[in-house]
Structures are given as structure tokens and as C-alpha cells.
Length: 325
Image 1 (cartoon, helix red, strand yellow):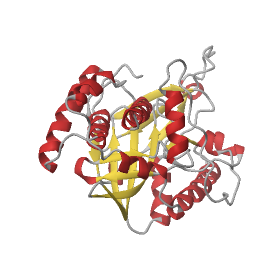
Image 2 (cartoon, rainbow, N blue to C red; image 1 turned 30 degrees about the horizontal axis):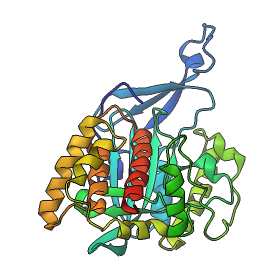
Image 3 (cartoon, rainbow, N blue to C red; image 1 turned 30 degrees about the vertical axis):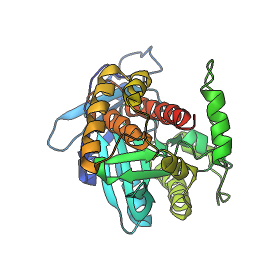
Image 4 (tube, rainbow, N blue to C red; image 1 turned 180 degrees about the horizontal axis):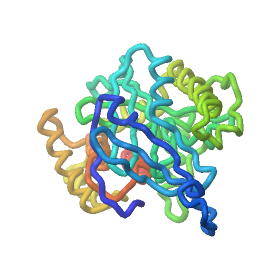
């Protein structure tokens, strides 16, 4: 976690997050010094629109910088029509949601398919696609998960149940996961067509040279194309299962036991009540999950985006376990 409390800001413009970013090497700044801290070799410096230059972090020599501009180039090349929703912080973290025109009906709502990427310049949130790091995606057997976008609260919903083949397998895993002791991790996502090109180990070391950025973009093109061709996944079925009503007064109990900070749980409760009024609905697992997701990704907190996603995944599985009881 970072020690700075930040509140994510929402933008629909690439220009707000594609500002200049560069590495400044300590050896260049201090040419006549012996640098003992060899694990800290480069300063990551960016300049946000209308602001001063910002030092986001001091990283090792092999730290990977992925400029948001490089991501934008690939998205614009492959996706003809999309809505951009970016949540970003002044500490250099980005949650980039590419909202696609295609929709799926969930509980009477039209929910958009989306592509969700995370990135950071402070090193706190690794670059990821649909919640999976590039390191994980180096395995050609690993498949991308899904994500959906809900307009009502500008939520990006990750496909946390996608690694499972069907609801029966997922429900069985939930029984083990909720049974106490060490939490069992979901399996890798292996369902889907074989990837055309195997990930190269070169992607582990992306710097600002044109060639290495091109290598990164080649792999990103493959992954985006794979996502655009994918069908709906198991998580969509779990969302349908979430439509059942929460037992009377159980929503307060569930909010208290969810693995989120107390203040975020309070904000989730307020959001839940608001959506109940807006939709004229009783509390359901669907509304409860969305309320917590909304609080996680909009509230001021010292949590990084990576922290928020890890909590979101735990909340999803915990609510799913209750809904299958």
C-alpha cells in the first residue's frame, strides 16, 4: 500500500493520462558519486497537464515503464468504436477501461463488454490486462479473462469466475475457499482458443527504446485481438445468480464481514441504499457487490489500484459463497 491517501479521478480523455514520462538515471544526475543503492538506479519523472514535473518513484535498472501513449496507439488501431473511462491518481496509477458497444443483459440492465488495463508510473500497480499481469500471460496456455462495464455507477467489473469451466466447479471451489484456513487460489484461465504467438521473455524488460516498445505493442495487439474475439464467460452467469435477493437485514451483516476497510464499507452501504432507490429494488447480491466495487474504486484511500482489485476479487468470491448457500 502507498502511504499517500488518494482519490481516483475519472476522465474520458486520453490526453489527461498520456502526458510525458521518462527515466532519469542517477548516474547521469550524480556522475562523480558511487551509488551504493544498486537496487535504485532510475527516477521515474512525468509532467501532468498543467502541472510541474513529478517524481513518481525511484526504481531498479530493469524496472519496466509502459507509457500510456503506447497503450493508446494499440487500442486506437484495433478498436473502431469505444468509450474511454480512465480512473487515475496524482500518484501515477491508472485504471483504463475500454468500453465496447456490445452489451449483455444482466438482471434487466444492459451491461457493456469492456477491456480493463491497469498501469502505473510509481511501481505500485503492475501493468495488467483483465486483472492478469504480463508475467502470467507469458504462459501461452493462459487465457485472458473478461470484464464488463456498468453505466449506472461507472463500474468496471472483472471476470473473477472465468477460470472455472462451469458453475458446479466454481461452487465446489467456493466451498473449499470459504472453509477456513489458507485460501485456495483460483486455477489459471485455460479455456479459449490457442494464442497465435507465444509471449517472448523480452517483454519482461521494456524500456524507452523504440524497439522494446514495439515488442510490447506486438504482444498487446495479440491480447486485445484475443479479447475482442472472445465469447461471454462464466462470470456473466454468476452475475445472473447474484440477482437473488439478500435475506432480510442480512445486507448489514454481509457488509460488516466483507474484507474491506470500515470506512469503505460505510460508503458501500450509502451507495447500496442509493441504487435501491434509483432502481426501485430490494437489496440483491448484485447491488451489494456493485456498491462495494463502487466504493473501492472511487473513495479516497491509501490503497493502490492493485490493492483495490485484490479486495474486489475477495469480495466477489465471498458474496458468491453466500449466494450459493
